[in-house]
Image 1: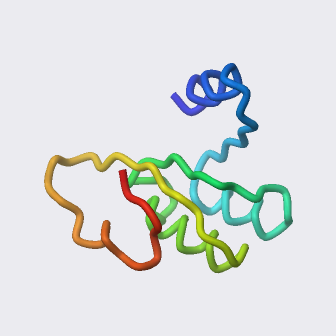
Image 2: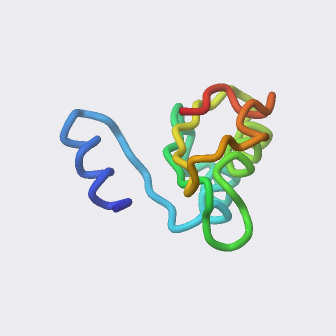
Length: 90
């Protein structure tokens, strides 16, 4: 799914970078490899971080607002979705 979405976005002219989990995304940001404007992530990610935590970590590391598009694995509202650490939750 990750690769298919990257291909779709690249086909529309966007630059993309993929990471297999949130920790990898944070590592890429810390090394200066990525500077995302938008993060598309599952809420439930492997290796202990969720999509909201990843965006909060990216914001802290990079020092700017990053938009998040995420889909929870449940239809129930997620209480932290309105967290001030996330600019947009879709």
